[in-house]
Structure formats: C-alpha cells, structure tokens
Length: 404
Image (cartoon, rainbow, N blue to C red):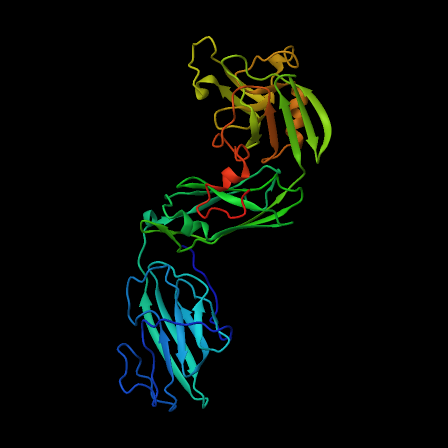
C-alpha cells in the first residue's frame, strides 16, 4: 500500500465518545490509581486531566483497518500527531476538543508514534506519547483495484465504470461502502457485482454528453473479507463525450447512426447467417483496432472446417462482445450488405462506411441490435444495459434503495 502523507490535526470540531484501550496521563485530582499502560507525565494541573489513546502502548499486529482515536478527559486537545515512515495519519478534533479521530487508515507492517497534547481548565498542558506497530501483509493478503475508464479518458454514453480486483473480495458490502461515483451533472446509478473480482457501476439511463465523472475507490486498508485488505485507494476522473448511438436492425439490413440524438447516417450492413446469428440487445464498443487479424479458431470454429477463416488485416474493427462480435469493414460481402446476412456474427459494412464509423467512435459508444431471436447477455462484454435498472441494482451488495 502507498504511504499517505498528512499533517497532524490541531483543530476543534464536533463532540464524539471515545472507548479507551490505553489510558493516558492522569493529573492530580483524578483517579487515585494510575490506569495500566498510562504515561509517566509529570502532574501539571489539579483538574484530573488525562489523554487516552485507543491503541495500547507497544501493541504489535494492530489491524490496518483500525481507526486511531485520541481522547482528552477534563481537558481539551491542543495537538495530535500520528507519524510513521510509512506516512503520517491525518485526523479531526471534535468541537469541544475532547476527541481526535483519524481520517485515514493505517499501513501494514508499519511503526507509528502517537503524540498528543491537551490543556486543562487552568491552561496547563498534559502530554501523551505512545507507539504501536501494525500487522504485516503480503501481496496475497491485499487486493488491488484496476479501474476503467482510464484517467482522463473520453468515453461514450454507454460506458460503465469497471473495477477489477486481483484478489477475490468476499466482503463485498465492506468494499462497496468505500467506492463512490460522482458526476456533474449528477446522475443516479448503482454498483453491480459480476463476481468476487469484478464490479460495475452504470447510471440509470445512458450518460448525458459532456458529463464529468470522478470515481473514488477508497479501499486502502479496508477489509475485503477472509483476511484480505484493499491494497491501494485510487481516484479516476474521466469525461463523457458526444452521444454516438448506432441502431442495427437485422430485419432491414440497415444501421442508423445518431450523434447527440440526430440521425447522421444510414448504412447497409450484413450480420450473422443461420447458425451464427448475431445477438439482439444493447452492446457497447469495448475496443477499437485499425486492423486486426480474425481467426475462426478464436470463436470455436476449427481450422479446416467448412466455416473456417483466417483473415489478416481486417480494417476498422470495433469489438462489442467478449464472444467475438465486431463491427468492421467487410469488402468481401459488399454485394450482400443491405439484402442478406452472410457473416459469422459480426456486423459487416463497406470499407468507406466502416472508416466513417470508426473515425467518430470511441470506447463506450452504444450499438443497439434488434431483429434476431438470439439475446445479448449481461456478461458478454459491456452488456450492463441488458437488464432493467431494478434488476441491475439487485446485484449491489448494498441493494440500492432508489432502484425502480
């Protein structure tokens, strides 16, 4: 996990209650017996002031999701510093100065020093210093979040947020509570877990063009279940570009392309022939290739069979399913485009039409298919739009309450 470097707090905010794990310095007028683990600070007032830290002095193997708290009794906190070579820990103080609470989580395998200063009613100070160390974690005990879209990327109105973990998350609710998606303008949305290693977020309807989005994956040191913790927190900012939505109708052999709601081009196409029917439903462009080799063995058609193919340099290829459906240039089928289906499931068009679409398209653009009896599925690519919002939200670990 990366270090978090923040200064100590010396402010006063709202009142909190602290459960003490390590008693602090007690001044005359307090308990006649010094609590175990308290410091040996010299008496400085007669108000019974004390400083308490919720991590025992000298503790080892402290969980990284422990929130450090410091409290003052019969006194007000003046400063608190939690320092470490792994990075200092920031925090806030309650309004009455009685409690300091960390706003950051601990790092694994690190040693920390807590230094707190409080002042009694007469203004005299009591100081408290304590040390502790955290549990050590190897990489198998930490899960790293990869995020799509990429930082600064401009994507289409159908692009979901995708977070992929390299170690399975079994406490999905714990992790989901620490992941947020904010946008301007704000749009309602929900998380949807596909597996213990992949979770998506989509808005209720397609993104509005020109929306600015910020994804905060604040999981550093958060428990992911089964002794696994988040390895790193990440913030990713991206933007929604123009709305480019293409509508393929297999019954009419045509594709209509709309830019920001306006029909700008109607293209003759061919889709999958019998036995290789193209799926109907909402698909999203996942990646683009100026040229790409297409080999039938990658989609389960063996070499040497009657349907086998191996074509180098297929132009203007835009993937829309994991199972191998693309939109691309198909100069070999121009005579069939607009009147017959002859492909193995891809959407073929002339080189000029494919070049035009390729040049205005980006990851996240939508392609809506109708006219076949083979449905698109939720998990075959960015198939997030092939479920009602209510059904989609049911796969949130927190069961989005606003889903309808």
